[in-house]
Each structure stands twice: as C-alpha cells, then as structure tokens.
Length: 373
Image (cartoon, rainbow, N blue to C red; front, side):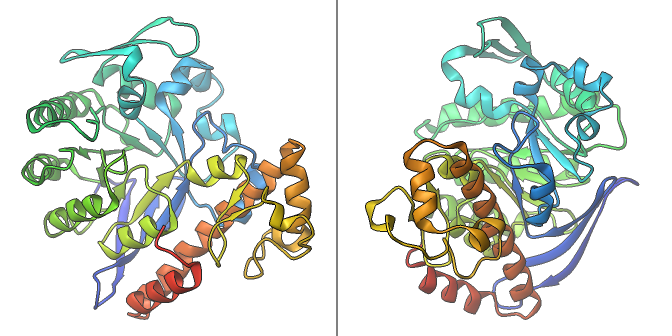
C-alpha cells in the first residue's frame, strides 16, 4: 500500500470468513466492515453533517459526474477541496462517473476514447475520458477515488459484457498513467456482469493494481440477488487479502449481511435516504411504511431498539402525519434513522466477527427482521 494508506486485517470469522479490519486514510481511520452513506451532490440528502457523525458514519461518498456538472470541480478545488467545501473532515470516496455511463445511457455514447454525454441538467455536451475523470477527482480531493469504468447492464449478452470488461481494463491503465496525487487511493473496478469467466478475468487483470483497495462493480443493477451472491462466491478465493474490498452500490440490510459473509469490507448505497423520502424505514422488526393507516394512532417509537434522535423523540403517528402532509422533516428524521440503523448493523456485524459468531448473528437478525429483503 502507499504511504498514505494501509489496511489492518484484525480478525476473520472462522466459520464464514467474514472480515474485520481498519482502513487507515489521511482523514482518519475507517473500521470495517463499513456502510458508507451517499452524498452524491456533496451532501447526504436531508442529514446535517453534525448528525451524520453522530450516526457513526466514518466515510461518505460523493460523485464525480454530478459535481463536475454542478458546481464544477474547479470551484471545489478553489474552495479548498471537497472536505473543506462541504465541511466533512472524515474520509470521502468519489465514484468515477462510471455508474452514470450506465444510468444515463440514453444521454451518452460510449467510445474507446471516452464517453460523450449530454448533461442531464441542460443538455450541455460533455466528454469524459479516464484522464478527465482522474483530473476531476484530483480537483475534488477525495481520499479514495475510482477508476473510470463501463458498468454493463443486466441482460447484456456475453459478447457485450466482455466488450465492457475489456474497455474497463484499458481505461484502468489510462487512469493509472494519469493519476498524479499520492494522497489519493485509486481502486480498480472488477466488471464482467454475471458471467463467471469474465469476472475472474477482470479480477485477474485488476488485482496487480489493487495497491490500496479493490472495488467490485456491475452488481446490484437488476440481477437476482442469488446471482450476485454466486458472483461474489466465485471471486472470493481470488480477491486480495491485504486491502479493503468494496462492493459498489449495495446497501439493503440483507445484502450487507450476505456481502460481509462473503468477505466484503466496504459498501455504499442511496437506498437508506431514498426510501426515507418515500416514508419507509428499516427497523429491527422489518420495514415500516409510516404513511400506512395502521400507524395513525400508534404513539410508539419507530424502533424500540434504536437510540437515534428520531426514535427517542417521535412516534409513528407523528411521522405518519409529517409524511402525509409533505413536511420535509419526515424525510430528515427517517433518513437519520435509516443511516443510524445501518451503522449499528455494521457495528454489530463487526462484533460478531470478533466473536466468531457471524452465522448466529445473521440468523437472529433475519428472524427478528422478518425476511431476507
């Protein structure tokens, strides 16, 4: 690993292989396994940074594409970098914009030299290359940066998935050549869709460049969950041991548990805040949709096993009222709760790993939660 980063593997659960460790970065230590809240536009939607820290969040995400479009990475650089701009002094990871190649497919054209976009905001023509993506991320100043990659959609045939995997490999080499800041950790990304041979080939090519960490992309994009787990099981024996392993875009409680079970260390997802804005909460007894009429006169906390500000001070009846009248406080309180819930889940998993009791923990969680979704 580089002089600015190191990963300390502290314990492996002897029955499952689930890992607990510490990822040392220039802006602080990250205990793993870790869930990283997503702050696409340099803010986690509806949550004060002060409150985000109280949830236990040690690292958050921001997005290269979106911040390049607005307010501009040059402006963020002038402001002193992303940490200073958004007043978050803990570690930050930036996605490369590769997912936007996937999610904004109707607005772009993919070539070997790069990706031509029409901005989703005003239609302005943009051209993203691996070199451009490295420059943007260096301006943003995140601790962990991602290579530019092509995420292929579920349903691609083998030939299409192979083309995307090969392009991701070529773009990795260009990212490595373009990267100039030693205080940023560049994670290569494993692609290959749901084809085992492509996954293993992509991993083989990425592994020598996984100096500070490695990411697995292109999963949780519409494929059945058992298929994602099959790909993780296949890759697991070949994943590097001495660096953090990051499964991109995964954040439901069951997927976090099953990912950790398979040796993954880092996760991110917008799900926690997205479902909060729709009136849905994760709780220790399963999902709760507060807008439902069943909670009209329910004066109990959202989750009696949670000590977040929302659960300590407000009832389901009040949250239902806020949601039904469109008050933004509903989204704020539920977002705070959902992030707190996932942070506690990760801490509990970490404790179970040290106790070599991960399987028992997982089974009890599922029994209490009521489902594996």
